[in-house]
Length: 233
Image (cartoon, rainbow, N blue to C red; front, side, top):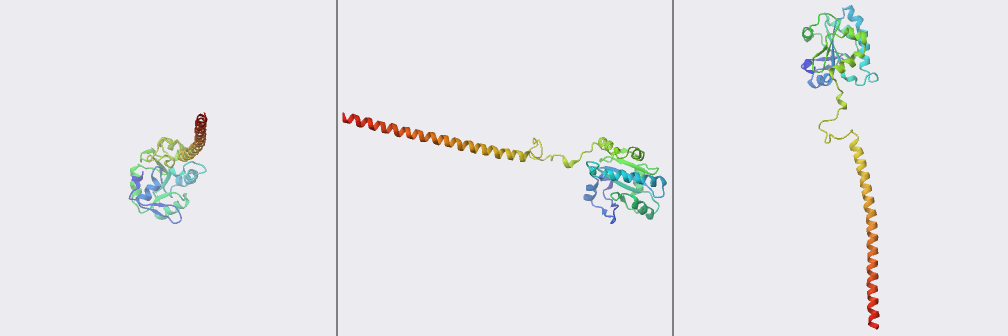
């Protein structure tokens, strides 16, 4: 999917119409996502009728309160308008997080031919590897709404990588990311227990040594007393 728009300029449909033209920017906004290519025209009545449905659909799927991973979806408007004024008018009605190609970019027509788009509105749904998930999802979106995305995500086997363990992590046998903390805690507690045990052992050992010294002194004293008794005799 990223390769499809590398060396191209994507524009954000915000008030500033920020341009994304570097490989890093394009990769960051399209990688590991299901991509919707929305082919439409301002002069098409069906497109005008479909636009509020699409906006509501896209709004829900970009809302983290509604969907778990809203970053897994991107929508690009491929204008088939006859003039830049028509395109600008249509964009004003579209969601602000939609991306689009500039009117003067001939790549719009190349994409139309590439995906064999003959009628509008058409939404081509692409997997992250650029393979086609569905050639036109307009009817499905109208009928099933945002439930479509869950089917696409399952079909594309799309996974949110943010929560995947780093393969280069030193210890892959850790049960969770909190294990190092827990192990440190338990290690500290073990050290405390060992220290306490050794202290106790030292006290016991010290006590035994003291008793042995007393016994030795008593034996020595006893022997001296016995020697003294024999001398008197």
